[in-house]
Image 1 (cartoon, rainbow, N blue to C red):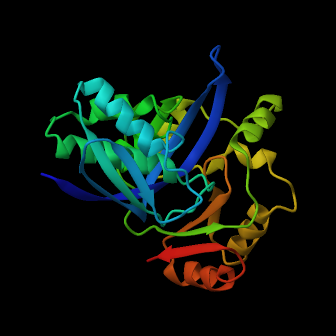
Image 2 (image 1 turned 30 degrees about the vertical axis):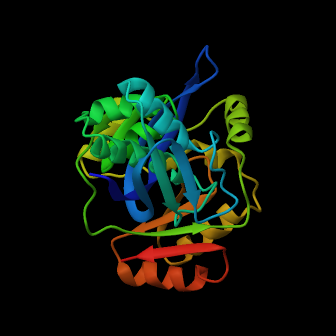
Image 3 (image 1 turned 120 degrees about the vertical axis):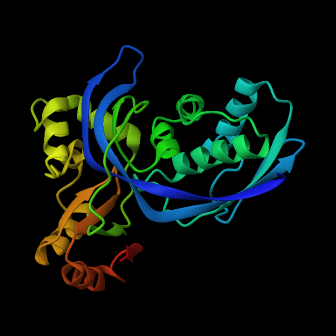
Length: 274
């Protein structure tokens, strides 16, 4: 195989809590992540070195790019003396908490495994990816999963009901991940489920929507404006990751469509795939 094309799907956090700060400065999380239809397109072909092109010129195409770092780690781990030409066609918004960079990196790992016929397991690809980004292991697995540690400990979960539909919205506000974690560290008390409670609720079909980072956003933020519009139509919503995108989730297409129609045009990114 000399080239391959992969759909790199975005993710959302149905539940996200930060459970502590580690000695190395990283934070432990407890999260349920879910793969959604929105996807970048990753095209990879054999090359003598690692090189990246991207449809969005503002995205770096050097070692700052997670896909580039994943390629470097793949060749280091396998000992293969090779390269890859990576073309990234972006559809997932940046700085959204939707895992756009991480899912591109995960797609590159899967592509390299196919191009070089290394036969690596999903577990091994996730392990390689964990060194480049905390969300990459989940993006390698996909589906729905409980994510722990810094995101590297993955427990696959049964999929959500296919009746659920999602509307993704990102406002103009951008949220710095580093600043968001600094604010999290300053929180004294907040809602928290234990791992067992979270798993029990999910197994029983109860979705406990929670994102600790919503405690750190300004009252007049786009995130809250978006959530207010979803609530107006009886649609549950939650910010994903450390922001700034919000998803609305419902098994009622009429309600979600009505919310989508009001949101569309008000905010820079609005996507609804029924």
